[in-house]
Image 1 (cartoon, helix red, strand yellow):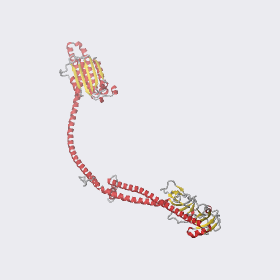
Image 2 (cartoon, helix red, strand yellow):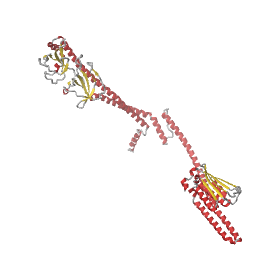
Image 3 (cartoon, helix red, strand yellow):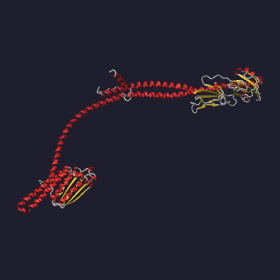
Image 4 (cartoon, one colour):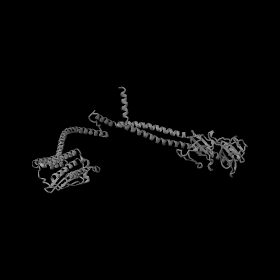
Length: 610
């Protein structure tokens, strides 16, 4: 027992949460599914929006930092250009360097070379008197300021990173008097972005040692930037759109650049300040935020599902109680359904069920009463049917007796009457004319043989049913053929194809009536011609008409001991047919039998052909 109770409890709990067995469970699962779906959809959508916003903010910050670094570098260049221009306009070249060192010590002046390329003064990085004609900072700074790398020795262009700005010294007439070069420095940007300074050939001039004097080899990835941020340089109008680039080592970084302006009145220098960050670092915060939003949404969805499940369970308590009450009524544990108070759908449903249950019980009582009455009536009707069946069997026996009587009348009675007439004639001949006795004996033998043949024919016809096998038309044709051979009376017989195919049990009775009519014609009519027609009227009535030109008779005259006409009427009544006999003395006789039939009972043509 202790083992069955936990298993039964588990089974009950499983059934209570099975939506196929419980509407409450179905509603709870629906609420859980909706809450979960909504939480996931909301977290996906909100997470995506938040992720995009965070990425946009990160890229904006990167762009702003890049632009700020470019501005710092451009401001440092502007400060040095302004100092050089002030000094060159007021002092000779030999004194210019000393003035700048004294007036602007924080700008890191390196050296001053005359127009011939000889160093006149310096901070010691380049010895005085050194020729710097071949150095880029001297050769390229005659017309405009130059930004680049200055080596420690005049003829060595070893990589030293971004170090100097060279500016031409010009007189009032615009002639170049010399070139002065100064260091460029700026604070490192906060955070983790990689800071580079690229020359016009995209060679790294400032940055990590591993990248110095190497060409930046990132390749742009098409259609990967989450947002297009346009950086418009106020110092020359140069623009750059942040983009994702793939490095040779397979990594992906986001790149932002800002132009470096050498002279506000001159063309862009082609130098860039570049900040780059790995793609993973760009999306790290966005992914963390999206994950957090997903977690919060799932938690909120779980809480919503729990609250919804509890609410659905509370709201369906009345329905559950109604279900239990209906089930108890079904098990005959209680008599009536408990109708809860209120006017909501559950109360209305309970009231309707209680009314239906009451009506069903009332109708059940009425049905029981009616069933008892029906059983009583069935018993009475059964006894009545049994009585009628017994009477039907007796009527069948009577009909069979009448049929046998008619057959005996049609065969043996006629034969016996003929033999009786011959016997009476033989007795008279024995007394009055013994010489003709032998001929009459032979005649009597013939009459006896004919009677025997007729009896055998009647017995054969009783055993066999040629009418049903071939149809009424062929059977009548054969009977009239025998009548012609026996009597020599001419017979004209016509039959419709449809009427000739008639062959149910009533056709056999019509055939017997036709045979009786032929026997009457043979024995009583003294006719020389007989006309027989079998026709179908309007597809619903079958008519058999037999007419002779004999002596006729009075149809109203009674003939005791003769049952031929009586038998015809009985047979017509037996098959529910109309019999009409028209005759008068010396005017022949017309016998008409009309029978209502259904066309479907006619035999098929192929059966009638046989």
